[in-house]
Amino acid sequence: MAKHILLIIGGGIAAFKSLDLIRRLRERGHQVTPVLTRAGAEFVTPLSVSGLAAAKVYQDLFDLTDEAEMGHIELSRAADLVVVAPATADLMAKMAGGHANDLASTLLMATDKRVLIAPSMNVRMWEHAATRRNLATLQGDGILVVGPNEGDMACGEYGPGRMAEPMEIVAAIEAALTDGPLKGKHVLVTSGPTHEPIDPVRYIANRSSGAQGTAIARALLGLGAQVTFVTGPADVPPPHGVTVVPVQTAAQMQAAVRDALPADAAVFAAAVADWHVKGASDSKIKKDGKGLPKLTFAENPDILAQVSGLREGRPKLVVGFAAETDDVIANATAKRKRKGCDWIVANDVSPATGIMGGSENDVTLITADGSEDWPRMGKDAVAARLAQRLADALG
Ligand code: C5P
Image (cartoon, rainbow, N blue to C red; front, side):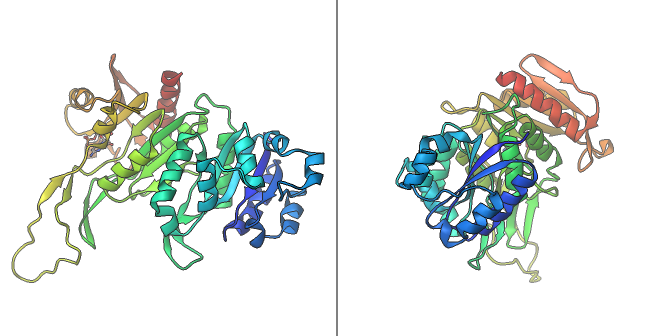
């Protein structure tokens, strides 16, 4: 599946990883046409970029030679996919605002191909309200996003903002180029547990490995969907190629879900804690011999019910999960009605089933038409079957 990628390299410290990205893409047989922004050229040289790409590097909108060889409109359309890596806060703002004042922004405005961005910036810049707004606008416009990851940053700070690794970007590029039945659809998946702090070192949580949610995200990706993966602290790593939004608490998950909409479908596989500790302590609660601490609980928002009840912008298909230990089908059927979702994937998580934390699942799909018992199978197989059903439903 050799494809042609137009790679726009923005001006961020992560630009050095884009050199490796070019190598990885070429190793896999893809053709890369590089575009270097003025700021990008401060971080990597045109010589290294064109050398690795074995292609001319485009830099200037008003370069007459380029216009004679290939106009910017043509350049923006010759590729199968446009990739921006690193996508700086400034490039994202330009894209969201529709600017076209240099070669990169003009190409992004003129292209008729899908665009994938790999954001990279300081954590504060990533979390800034303006970047949040721009990201929502871009996702609403159908721009695909991979990363950023959380970790140490070149500027010495820690948090989300590191550009996705080259192989993660390659996976997202290949997923974007896959002609699956969910191509062009945005699906939101929640996964993992939430951690609700008692104090800075203690928390309450539901048991959840995140294995089923992760498998679902991977299966959806395999059918060509653009997946936003909102995950609590899970045991298994998120799949490559999805947009990962890591959260800790239910309140953060609720905000992340809101930011990720609109979506064509949403699958709520997260084991969200029902309660959080009201007035969690900012400092560690001490064993001071004056008796046991008194915890007061408050209810968490029901994210699934809220999204199911949206009057505007409700995903066409909303799928919930029901992990039950008794009367699985009756409880799950009631839950589908109560929450207002379209489907419920019900499973028996009694310890004897070995499902919790295991590799298999035994589910019943509950829809408006009744219930459907699926045979016990691997979590990947459950995910593949669910993703296919979802693709059929979205048509
Ligand atoms: O915890 P409960 O059995 O109500 O969970 C059923 C479904 O609702 C699951 O899909 C879960 O992800 C979702 N849920 C949610 N927000 C909550 C509680 C559950 O989205 N606060």
